[in-house]
Image (cartoon, rainbow, N blue to C red; front, side, top):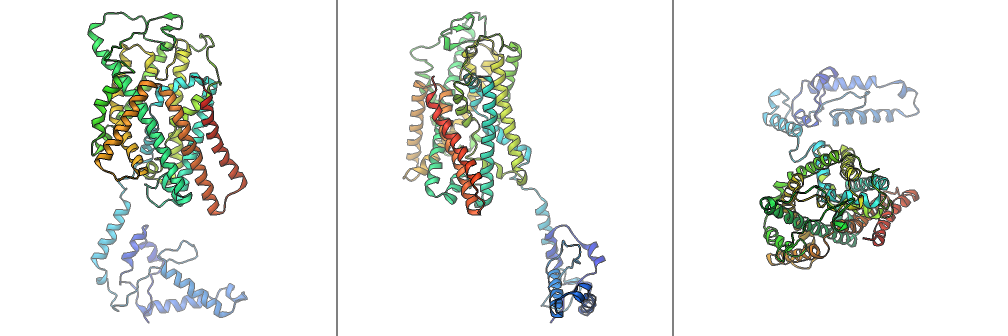
Length: 546
């Protein structure tokens, strides 16, 4: 039997490498020792093994010998041993030849090993840094809720609003992190294993179907809100350009209060009416939007619209600048206004909105799976939610504090509080119009995919056009008869939030703990309380007076 060769400790320390992939090259048939030399060294080590432990131990000599050979075998099979008492040994065994010269250290093995090492050191281009991941989450969460946040603060009252934003942010952050933990333990190892797949694995097909249904509700609500915004932006943008040269009226204010029939606090300013039988904000313009948008919904490849994703970040940045500039110009006005608000009475309006404003749970696994440093997912997700929270407070809270008219004048779309000819408002509407028109086909595509999953029909061109027609029809009806985006957002957020934010993450975590034998009464009560919060949030929406 051929004996195994070893290097001395000094040679080993000089020839060691950090990469485990380099061991393949060192298992080639080459060595500096001959078989005889190594066998003699092994006998010498065996004689020196008779330590005080073996002499004074109650183990018999056979046991000591067995322990020695087990130790030597482990050293030979492990190129590096982390134990400080173990001598690292490189192993090189061949059964094909007794020739052990350096000539058999083949160039192909060297090149293959070098290639593996280089591939390991190269970063995966599909991965992204923590900074990119943080801003991806921030940009994904940000949406139309920015325009309605000040209205939500007005309905809840400033002190209650600040507390609610903090609580909802913490709850949504925790349940999103729970989904990441459950996916790490029970996911299939693929980034495409989102919430419905986890529900199928841990809770069964019924839970998977429920997850798909409520994803459908979220997407339907988003489609309706986007359609109303497109209608609004198109209406005022066209009026702005038409009236740019023909209108000679001087406006002594840039603020409006549409809710009070022309009464702007202490000012009485008539709100201009540009409606005609052929051009109405809640009559014909939603139909004109269909003429523009419907052809875009039938593109075979919607990936073209993803090229405009940067507009989302640009729009959010512009809205922040817009609010800051207007607020600085107004100054603080919260103490000079009469108390016409109802603090805390309609707090559920804001909580329902926030359930959708912080909603990212249906795609959070995919986003965080692209993070290059998976061990930092919890930290990066926390930073992203903090940024989102600060953005909402900045837009909603600062606008509310500085708004110079009665706080009840704040609209669920803050741009409606500004006169059409205000330059910054006109630029905001044009920018947001282009952004929403390019985002809408993507949202409609996701809605269509969810619908096809639930329908017992095979995907084909006819089915695609039929679903798109149904989506457009519902959006037109909503834009004509229920154009209040704040109401749609709060109901959609409360319904979908109960399932995707509160219930499913809690149930998945409870099931995961149960399978691992770590479920306790305290943990069960905690997750039941989270589900109860979502249920209360939904029920309270039906007691709000519009």
